[in-house]
Image (tube, rainbow, N blue to C red; front, side, top):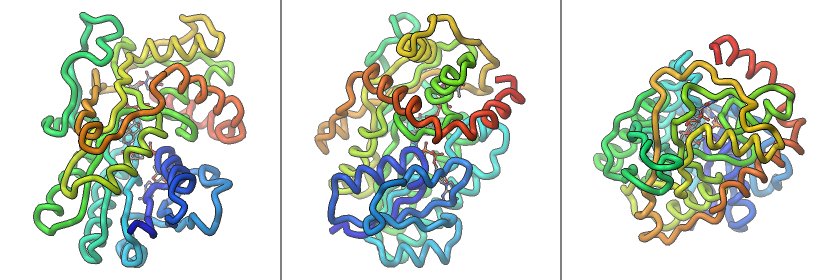
Length: 343
Ligand code: NAD
Ligand code: DAU
């Protein structure tokens, strides 16, 4: 019975959306959020959630005594906490190694000790990238080679290699110590509460600020977009129905190249299609991600609900438009960091 859940990183973008999902859909579950409140953790992301359902513990997942104290009274840990931004990992990899690798190690050691169920939230980037499908319009939405749970690990960046390392630790702890763990690797999320350093919210808030959006390199790199609410439902499904030791890939057939996404944002916000700047590319920039979620669909019956990307994007634009107080104070600082990097 899942009554006491620990959600690490539950103040961040995807973690806080998951906490909201649990509060709204699982009335008997109490959530303890363990979050360090780094630059990416905003207390406002949990605003309005009932205090008798959600407790925030401000702390570090690398703090073993604290982690043990929380884990010993939990039924399960859902692990979102991470340094999550590729561009940051290229400037300073150190916190990625510490949080993503040492932090995951600390959590699985505690779960092993107290025999607690563990779900590890990971990313499709551990599989590296796929070739572009330049022969197909829109780079072949839903067509061509995709990542499967058997794809080889080929991470490209400090961020994705630290996530790959954490996945491998979890797999080894399952095999060697009988850790009751599952892993999910999801594609690019979008939706409310995403930090404005990331692609979609950066461009929306640029336009809302009267600045021009910034596209890296050719703009032909493809990402496989999924609404974060569909990710939350998938994680709950895997936590409660997934088979121990298994890896599930989460994706919603949302392949689009960055230029196409940006042109859609511009159109939905009433701007000319070419009202953006091309800037310096990201070193080692992965070309294309694409998820084959057959296993999750057929074995656990999960389906995405937000199947129309433009509708999800319009709702996301509306959220940033009506929540200027949530992002305005950090906008100049985020852009100054990018400007320093020529982006
Ligand atoms: P985010 O950067 O918005 O949030 C990360 C949260 O973790 C923040 O609240 C931060 O304060 C917390 N945190 C960081 N270091 C910590 C530490 N040492 N101890 C405790 N808390 C700490 O990240 P996100 O985009 O919401 O991603 C969440 C998870 O989902 C990550 O594990 C990421 O790899 C994975 N993921 C993200 C995506 C995506 O598209 N964003 C896709 C697939 C998987
Ligand atoms: O695939 C899942 C991953 O998706 C997650 O594991 C990561 O945590 C998450 O950050 C995301 O990684 P990406 O590097 O794909 O996301 P980002 O939002 O940084 O960039 C998306 C694409 O847009 C990428 O091809 C780079 C490009 N880009 C990004 C920014 C910030 C631009 O063209 N301009 C920009 O200003």
